Length: 232
Image (cartoon, rainbow, N blue to C red; front, side):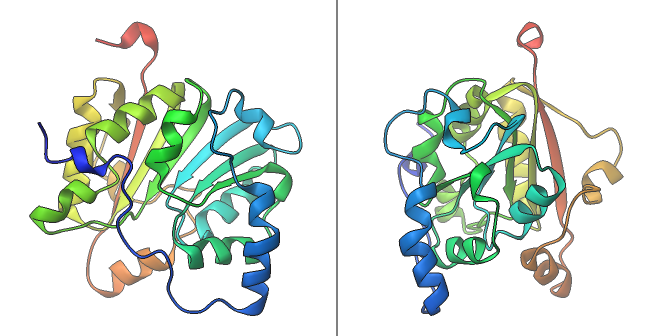
């Protein structure tokens, strides 16, 4: 039995911060219900979107939505699934005027959604600056666990990209160990700059700026879902 087992089906952290502004409250009441993914299993991710998309990308814990909105602008043919249980973060994303026709949202813990997505249905996944839960007794709360990695491997297509960013050294090592232990991913880094430098399409986030201000160096890990023939 691992210490990570309590993570599945559990949400840790705040649900809500400061009081929402009137516009944000209206968006949560009127827009979110239209974009919310239902409780049943998803048989076809393309059916989540109001218009055809070429790929489907998944961001787990999008914070205020800066990265998701940026990627939507860069990739106008991609559909996005965004997971964020923090109410203020969800409200901020909706206030950023995303393209609703290619956006689907899950406003609860991502570990509840992953098992409901079809196998090999996601072309790219992101987990960016998740809560590090630094104390040893808290680590079972981390979103990256053996179970989450297994679920990500199941939903990602062969050759799909999984990006992870953190400013906590221990969390970078923690993630690298669990992803590689799964035997279902390759780490794409060939040199130190491949994980020390941000991706070329990275917009930066407020979490990253806080890390720089406090003297922490982020790590940017890129993994590739192995093809079936390469699996051990």
